[in-house]
Structures are given as structure tokens and as C-alpha cells.
Image (cartoon, rainbow, N blue to C red; front, side, top):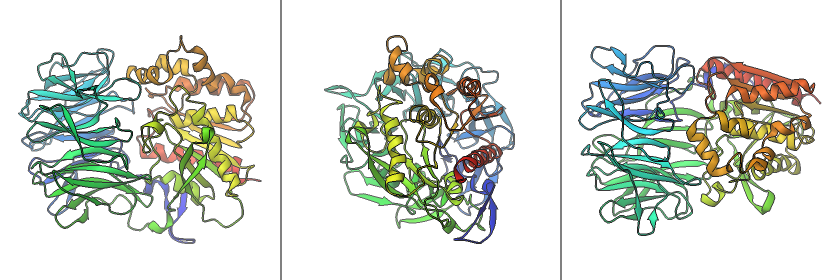
Length: 604
């Protein structure tokens, strides 16, 4: 895989050089209790490893070296130990490791576990215990365990799947988040010794809430809630059982974070897929900050409350670790994932466009125009997963590669996406594979109507739920597409429901129904039953260790397409789960997809 830097001729570089960055799908980093250094997960070597960076001089050192992915580092309260999570070939069955920072000795304190532990772990304030979420009981519940290793003790036990446990500052209570009904979430409190969990609520009853953070004194909780129609930030008073809102429903806001001195709350504010930092003084004014247009993620204060750590990525920048001096508003970059030899001007910055779809709904999308000369290039509809996610103004090296190859790419935020309010997010409930698929078709039609792409050379691609919609599109609108590439998809709602994890199954029940009671809905939304209508060449990629969209889903489609004599390219990654963890596999997968699309879309 080769790309050319600069506007035309220039220095060549490998696609592999564009992939390293700070981990951005979960917890990327943790500030040490002293504030002297930050631990973070980086795939600079081709695999996710843990690094430390000193904040005084910016010195970086790698502290793990094994071949499996290591994520979610957390310092102990005394700063002498570091916990992190490790899975195996992407199977998402994480083990918890403990590293002594003096002796450099690392030890697996959950060896031989067969259940899944979510990569979000928390030390108790006294450093003697961990809180974590595991599905060892058949669904995700909160557990505690000694920080030296030992038996897990179940803390929460109710009908919902739990995640993201947080100790109260006094160590007496554990707060966690759980899916409740529909697409709502709830914040729950339970005694650290176990017992009945209580959901946060007010005089009207339980409230939709997520992303909670304890105030330093433990009397209030900052949270995000869509109860007013957008994702707003509020402060919940535990004694008065009411919320004081900090935001006004203008923009979706996420991930509130208290300053250690209690003076302010930082959060992320979404502006059409550009996500900025907001800093709201308690009882005072709000300030916003951004490095440049892009996505600011995972906010954390330094212990002195004077600096804010975060990751930033954008259409010209992979995710890196940054620091903001709150007093003067100046930024300092701590990592440099993109080689200095690469000219960032080579990358196309997308434009936000909108088009009308079924029901008159306006669908937002990011449009990436190719700089290659020539009229009406091939077009590609690029679909995010989720579906409750958003294609943001972020770093997508595979999109940049496709644009450099001469494709015009449109990435729609189809109904069901986040970022545009609760009504839009819930607009595909019980009509998945139908109304959101209409948005995919409308994106392709937009390319044609605006004379941006050759109508005979339009393809579709996506990963996970985006892969599902890709196959839906090929089966339900067979005459529209010239090719389709589905990465880690599912195709059969019945078998997906049967084989997926319980937390995913619960979400499906709440948003698609029951496979027996709603069998017709499940059937009509499953492209496997309409696979004979596919006419365009199909590419399928899958991971052997995938616990979300199992390999058997892609295998069903491959077998059916081959039996029908269709053109199908089937690629299996033995050492991957849901998507790519290893840089070499990501390069290989993206290279295979680009070659497939070039073969079927570039020739006239």
C-alpha cells in the first residue's frame, strides 16, 4: 500500500505509517497521583502497549513488550503499581495484570478466566481492592476483588447489564452504569459491600443518565442525560435528588469530569462532528478550547487542577496525547504518532452535507472529494458501525487512502446515529435494516444528483453494523451498487441474537424485539434471506475470535453466495476479533478492500 504525500508528486509513505495512535475506543490514559507522569496505550510498535510520559520534560518510555494487546492503564493510589487489561487475539476476554513500577515485574492476577472482563477497572481509594464488571454470572455485573489477586465478589445483582464502576471518594459506595429500557441508560449506586442497587432519580422517577463522575467531596455526581432531548451535562445533588443543568440542549455534550479542587467541570461538546473541550466553572462561566477542528476525547485533570489531559485526532492527525494549560489556554502535544516526514496537507478535510431521506428526514454526512483529475469518479458510501455511534471529523486513514486512489467518499450519519439528539438516535428502533437502509440509498443518490460520482460505479462498505447495512444494501437495492465490502458484519438477526453476548442480546431485544414474537421483523431485516438478490461482487472480512459478530455470520453469506455462483471474496483473520487490533492486519485488510473496490469500481 502506497500513498503520495503533498498535493501531487511528493514523498511516498506506507499506509502503516498512518495507523499508529493513542487508543481512543476506551480508556486511553491515566494521570499518576503525583501528577508527574501519564500512562497510556499506544500502538506505535504495531501492537497496543503501555507507555509512560513524564510531564516535566516529555520523555516517553515503553513499559510493556509482549505480543498481546494491553489497554486501560490505571495507577494505584500510591503510584507504585500500574494495573492494565490484556486480551488474546481480540477475543475481548480480558485478564487483569498488575505491574510493580519499581521491580518492573508484571503479574496476571486473573489467570485462567474464561469470562469477559470489561477493560474498565478502578482501584479503591485505599488501594486494597479493584472494582470491575464481568459476565461470569451470564450477564455483566459489578464485582470487587483484592488488588493482590484472589476471588471476585459480586457487588451488583439485578436484571440489567452493568459497566464502568466507580468508587466514591470515601470508598463506601460504588457507582456504575447500566442499560435499562430502549436505548436509555441509568446510573446506579450500591454499597461497596454489596446489596440492592439504587438508580439515580428525581420526583418523576428514574432518570436517563450515563458517563457519571463523582465530585471530589462525594456529595454530587456530574453526568450526561438525554432526558431533555439532547445529551446534556447536569450535576446531580445526592441529598436533594435533583439535577442542576450546565448545558442548554444546543449541542450534544458528553463525559463530564470534575476538577480535583471542585472548582469546575470539563466535558466534550459536539458541533457537527467536531468535538471541542468545554470548561464550566461551578457557578460561573463556560470556556471552550480546541487544538483545531477534530475530536477531543477522554478528558482528565492533573491533580493540581491546573492542566487538562486529553487525546486529539482529526482529518489530518491521528490520535495523540495533549495537555491544556487552563490558565493561559495553551496546548502542549506529548506524543507524535504521525511521522514528521508526512505532509499533513496531503489529507482531505471533509465537508458536512445533508440530503433528504424517507419521511423527509434530513441526513447529515461527511463528504470527501478526491483531488484526482477527471470527471465523475467512482463513488463510495462509507458506513460507521454501532448503530448508536457517529462518523465524526476524525482520523480515518482508510478513507484518506481511498480518496487518494480516486474515490469520492460520503459517510452518512444515518438515523440511529448519535450526535443529533435523542429523537434522531432512536429513529431506527424496530426499523433497523429498513429506514436506516433508506438513508444509505439516499447517500448514493446524493452523489448522483450532485454529479459527484459516476452512477454506474458506486460501491458501499462498512464495519460491524456498517457491514450489516452494506449487505442489506446489496441485497435490497441490487441495481444501485457496483460492489460492496463488508467488514466483521452480521447478516442474520436470528443467529446473531443466538450467538452474541448477553449485553448485546439485551440491546437487540430492547430495540428490535424478540426473535419469536417478532419473527417477521427479524426475517425481513436479515439480508441472508434475500442473498439471492445480490448481483454485485461482494467482499466479506471476519475475525475468528469475534464475540460480537461471529465468524459464522460471514460464513453463512459466503456459502450462500458461492452456491449461487456470485463473485465473493472471503477473508478471515485468525488472530483478530471484532475489527483489527494489530497494525499489520489493519494494513492487510484495508489493502485488500481497496484492491477489491478498485478492481470493480475503477474500470469503466
